[in-house]
Image 1 (tube, helix red, strand yellow):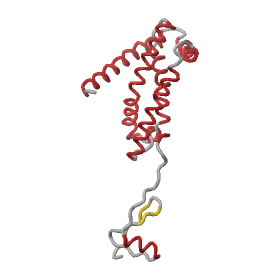
Image 2: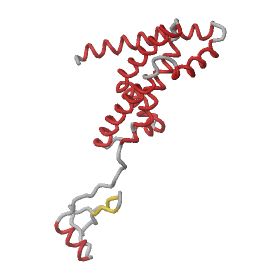
Image 3: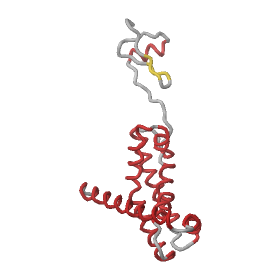
Image 4: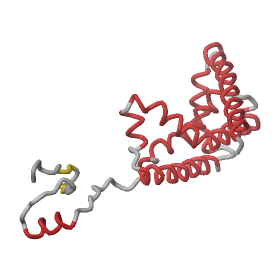
Length: 193
């Protein structure tokens, strides 16, 4: 996709989200009984019409998490959820990366929730739409992306011919180019050895 179109689409989605949040926040704190209705609507959605989205969105998020988790494993990146939870330096970048990966799924979820609210509730509640989209798309992605990466295994450093023969005979003579690997920690060559 053209980078200018992608940037414009992202900007439009963020703008729509900000406007919807402003209206939703206003309604959330000014209308009576909003909190009760909010949680009642959230709980009743899986049993109502358009319940297929409660399977479709998490499935799509799982596929995206699988694809990105495999990519993380191939490039040797740290697990996604662990980095988001424990590394404040990389947290923002990784969260934005996850939102970018699930952006289409989130947008589809917002559109489906808009349709649900229009036809069933006869009203649009932006906070509910955002909460449902995040619960169905981003949360499964966040939790499962790191789970698809294979466990980290120590890598073997190739030994030179002299190092292999020394290791097999039990005589450890090292040259400046030899490195022996023990678990995850490499033993550097001995000076003058």
